[in-house]
Image 1 (cartoon, rainbow, N blue to C red):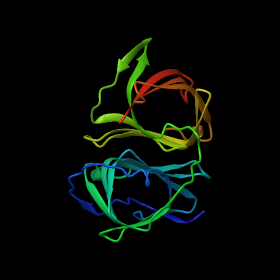
Image 2 (cartoon, rainbow, N blue to C red; image 1 turned 45 degrees about the horizontal axis):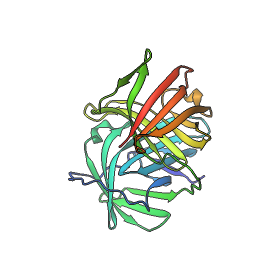
Image 3 (tube, one colour; image 1 turned 135 degrees about the vertical axis):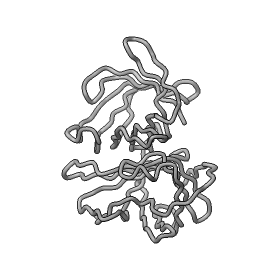
Image 4 (cartoon, one colour; image 1 turned 45 degrees about the vertical axis):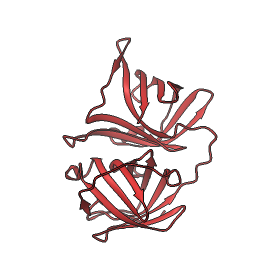
Length: 246
């Protein structure tokens, strides 16, 4: 496994007026192979970056110890040789929330090398994801069953987003106004016969759940804009959720 230097990659901060657009060529799951970070390095750490529908999330975790290290994300756009990020959540440095960051991108196809104006470097390699069926996209939880009734969850600064590539997922709960980070988890998923199965690779709230697999019933409704999701949570409680495409 390559050595990764972990820290807050988003150091070069600028004020940007964002018109968020995504390019289907760059969407998907990427492995972070070099990751600059302040005074923190980790020999056995893994970094994953997801890019979907103009949103991004990254997570750093240790596969050997199951330790969760950090996460961040928000919206992004790519134009020419630049990639611009807007930070909506950051578990390690909430002072970055609401800021824009610009990187210059070199390379093409499945490998990118990016560098900020301050010399912060980020190298990523696209993961191969050959699946026939997926829930690829960015989803926001919009309804949840409570005491037998579906309760609407309004779209506000406090939200839970779930970004899925063709085979990987990451959910994050956060408040982009207060800077609060409530939790995240992620890993890989599969779809088969109406069943959605997650395998957890990192979980900020309880790393003893790493390695577990959870299976749910799922269906896509409302012209592919709603994902209905039901089953048992990681704590064994019954859930019914509706996720809306962002």
